[in-house]
Image (cartoon, rainbow, N blue to C red):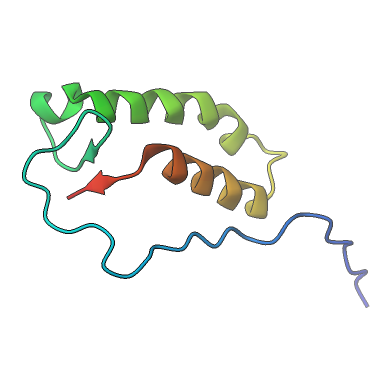
Length: 87
C-alpha cells in the first residue's frame, strides 16, 4: 500500500466574486486587462502591467519543484493583482 504524503500546503484558493459585481464597462481605465488581439490591446497599460506580473511569476510557476497546489496559489495571486479582466 502506498504511503500517504503529509499535506502541509494551504488549501486551494477560493476567490469569491460578489453577486452583481461589475457590469458593462464603457471606458476601460488604466488598470483594466483587456481581452483581444493587436497593438492597441497589447499597448493598454493594464495589459502591459499584466504581462510584467506574469513574467515575474513565470519562473516559479514553471519550476519542476513547484507543486500543483502551489501553482493554483500563484495563478490566484496573479488574478487578484490584475483584476478586473474585461472581455
